[in-house]
Length: 85
Image 1 (tube, rainbow, N blue to C red):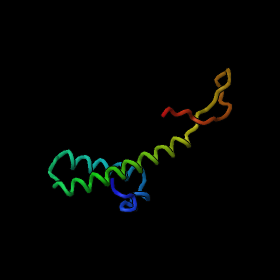
Image 2 (cartoon, rainbow, N blue to C red):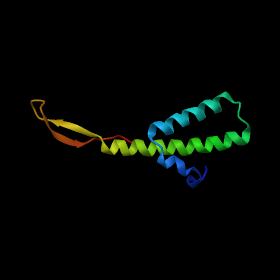
Image 3 (cartoon, helix red, strand yellow):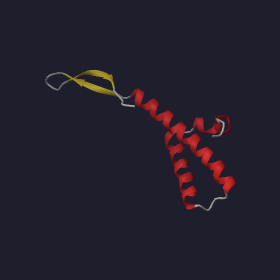
């Protein structure tokens, strides 16, 4: 996999931007009309984009809270969301 410093611009991308570019890369690779060397380069960029998206999702999950309810189903506060790995 490529060194992440080669993809420094990715760290500034929003989740949506990174996902859109990742989808474009997958589309190009699936079509199979990319030369081998170019395929390797865009695959490596895709891996970096995927890692960035994963990191952004983990950050978002850490911020999500669930509302706790009392016996009458009235909101009483929030608590961290239990996320299964």
